[in-house]
Length: 304
Image (cartoon, rainbow, N blue to C red; front, side, top):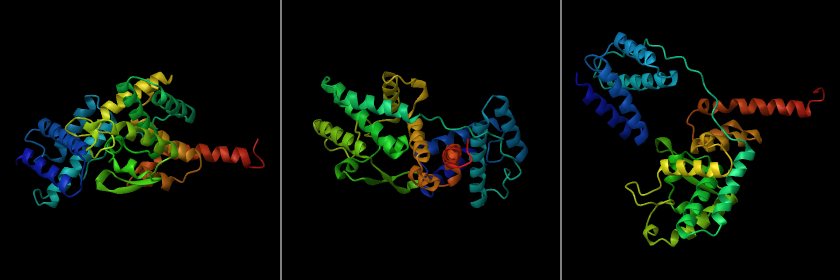
């Protein structure tokens, strides 16, 4: 049984039928090819004992429980596909237990820290600086304001179409994971920062025809996640915030946490983040618990 060909067929199905993103497909490929190389005879022909031995091996190699669980999830999906396509008559993962993993709380930032970050970005964008520095500052200000206003995934943010800024609406539709659309809000500050960036962007003839809000000269046509992450860390350091503490994902978590702290409903936050399942959003349940304790302590007549 040709494991490489079976893996390719599985990845094609994930792309064509489920709309899996390139990052997701790359992750599946790495996990499945790693398992196939480690299992004698290849993954497609593996039995339960082979897969269990592989899981024991990666645990012994020091992989975190979360990584073990992710690899097993990829393998499960692969064998479900083989079974559904009549390429195997059984599913050897059916009797395997998932590695136990804790659910760490997401890293986030306080409202005060987020305010300092945004204030620093606004200050740098308004300073009179050389043309190249001013353009970069305006772009970074627009990026952080939009990210904190919307809670977008970083891949969604850097790939935004320019029409989002041209319309100047309070809400816009974004296409997220699985090609699903959702509505997200834009604050007044985010719209103002985008307009300033749009005006500066228009001065660059090379960007005039780009369909992207944050264009660059590259194969993708838009700013990369890595460049934004690097610029964000630099901004944090200049705002007096430890660079190691911040990333685009941390700012997305701050968006969700601060909404919940200020009275938002968990279901509403689920929709804004684009989580398909409420269980994913429940990593923020601790925020709700803290809010309820504060509510009781502040308003219950018998509270100390």
